[in-house]
Amino acid sequence: MSDIQPRFRTIDGLSIRYAESPRQKPAALLLSPWPESLYAYDATWSRLAEHAHLIAVDLPGFGHSELREDLLSPSAMGEFIVRIADEFGLTEPHVVGPDIGTSAALFAAANHPGRFRSVVIGSGGALVPTDLGTPLHEWVHDEDLAPYKALGSKDIVTIAMDAIEGYELPDVVRQDYLAAYQGQRFVEQLPYVRAYPTDLRTLNGLLPAITTPVQLINGAHDPVVPVSNVEHLHSKLPNSKLDVVDAGHFVWEENADEYARIVTEWWQAN
Image 1 (tube, rainbow, N blue to C red):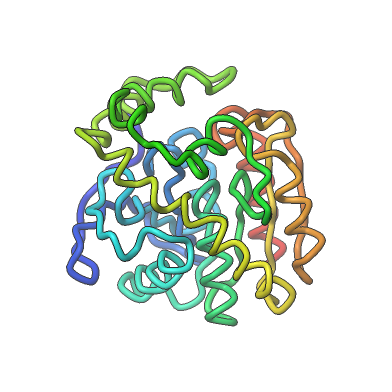
Image 2: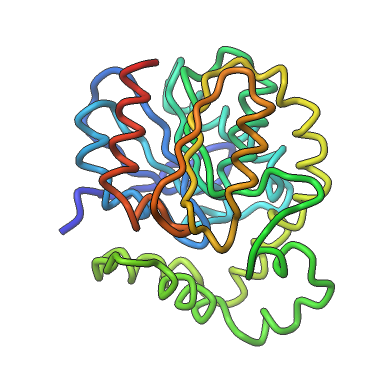
């Protein structure tokens, strides 16, 4: 049985799913990767909870949280991350945002200096022109979305889960991922990553001014988001640390021990 016990809360009129660990200091806001959910932290939850008060959220439109079209871009999602922190009374939390959380967390840090104690990101698009692997490159750039509509959301999630290397998803996690993708849910989420070419260009101009400490983590063998993305961020961010881990894309599950070690040591240092 998972230590994660989800519940729902209305934030800015949207039904947002979250899970929380017992209260202590400091606090950490964990953002769901795509196409997974807050259960992506199942493999690291107990270790992370030893060091911080965790609040994990399914970002709006992802996991089991309600979708709103105007939030489906990294820049807009960055503002909503601040709104989430405000709602939970988190005055200066750490933020952990792998995958799609990477660009959103950076927008939040850029536009709200001092709002976050630190940021942990990686495995997310950061370069313009985009340097993305399969299938993310196609999701961002393909003009015809009909094949994705025909394939179906659960089929796409199943393909993603089967790509997780060396880690057998617990049944509760697998079923939660699948349940999050009903109907055309996946296609409805695509505008978020299809905003990358425009939003990442804007973000690149903001990077040198981000003084929030940033820990970058990426799988060395990530076929979806190559290491070049975090290397770029590391070269542009004035206060960052980079760790490349022996894993593929889903580093938080594929090498959970190393991921938890890097994150908790980073929290202790910041």
